[in-house]
Length: 96
Picture (cartoon, rainbow, N blue to C red):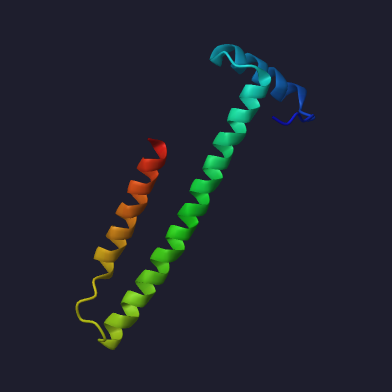
């Protein structure tokens, strides 16, 4: 395990010390867990942005295909719902 030194605002350190007592962890455990949770939030945000872009692209493609009449059986709404469900399932698997 790596050992690091950080500089931190006194006010934040006091809050950390108060919370660490409540959750029964030392400072190292507190900061390690906080970093882990922060990275999880970043990963979720990146996944959300990718999903949003994919849906936007899928909707654009669906509209184009519909306008051109290339595929009469294309259902962009159904495909978007499927993508949303897959993402929801993925998030649920992460939590478990």
